Amino acid sequence: MAIIIVATHGGNSGTRATDDKPVLTEQDVNPPKLFQPLTIGNLVLRNRIVIAPMCQYSAVDGCMTDWHLIHLGHLALSGAALLTIEASAVVPEGRISWADVGLYDDATEAAIGRTLESIRRWSDMPIAIQLAHAGRKASTEVPWIGGGQIAPSDPHGWQTEAPSAIPFEKEQCTPTELGRDRMIAVREAFVASAKRAARLGIDAVQLHAAHGYLLHEFLSPLSNQRTDEYGGNLENRMRFPLEIFDAVRDAFPSERPVTVRVSGTDWVEGGWDIEQTVAFAEALEARGCSAIHVSSGGLHPAQAIPVGPGYQVPLARSVKQATSMPVIAVGLITDYDQAESIVGTGDADIIALARAILYDPRWPWHAAAHLGANVNAPPQYLRSQPMRFRHLFDE
Ligand SMILES: Cc1cc2nc3c(=O)[nH]c(=O)nc-3n(C[C@H](O)[C@H](O)[C@H](O)COP(=O)(O)O)c2cc1C
Image (cartoon, rainbow, N blue to C red; front, side, top):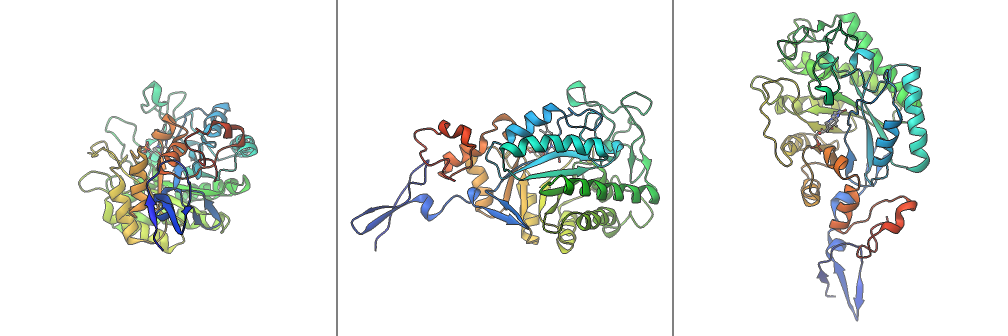
């Protein structure tokens, strides 16, 4: 029987039979991969678009405020598959700035709980949280007041800590080198936060091992110059991040994903690079890591980043080729066809959006319309469906 393929945009018009010749649309033959579901553990992702963690610098004493309800609430209506709560510090001194979110005591847990209770009343989007410690890059001003480091003696500042007593920039305060006792305390803080996240019903945990924060500082030879079993060769530098992964994996319900965000390279000669990232990814996968999110940079002021559309995708591709866990690509993914081609060609399984979805919180709707797929929309907004995309909200 002959099949006639017609190219259409916007709508899963399906087959249209004429006599004995069914007519298939392009999407019937090759539906967009970006809108195909994916399951990670017990977590069902409706599509391949996730919202990257984004600090809002709008917390009070580590507690989420109304801003977080507005911000996360509107992103929870976007049609993406997963909303990731911003870097949430496991100890107060692990916050990047004094206005960061924390998940380190009952008050910070209750504040997240209040935000999530409201969001969940109106959105069934799964929610992940990024657990973080900012290491030597902690104790800063909020970005719109300059983002500079604040000295421990200033009211909003505190003493930073890191694998080695090396500041990010020469003129900054020198961090305290973490001793073994303090490392155990940090590990237990990650565990305690993961338990709080589990109690809050959060669907997945992402460990922040990217962007020059504490776990990345252990990984990179530029920031880790320890002489004990946590410094030196790659195996030693990976030891503490892997210990934290194991401890968090044990503490968080086994059916819910624990994922890791890495910097695929420092973009600095002699630093952390993609070969080491692949080795780290393989070690994580062997320990039951559910997915890996590949970003880059942030560790060293000398970084030379070739910024451009999809500039980090090759890093994700390298990790994807070496592992079988789901890989998330991120970084200047702004265009719908670009996103489709990243997951369609298998460079990554999922794409993450940060700035593009702040700019256009309906990005997934527009992508679905453009690619001829369906997307989830809240019932209150169903009447906004444009006439020409008759089946857009038919998910
Ligand atoms: C406002 C803002 C806040 C961010 N906060 C975080 C964060 O909390 N944790 C993190 O890992 N990355 C953070 N990032 C980085 C993004 O998650 C993302 O990796 C980066 O912006 C590149 O993706 P994009 O080109 O889609 O924006 C932040 C980015 C922005 C724009």
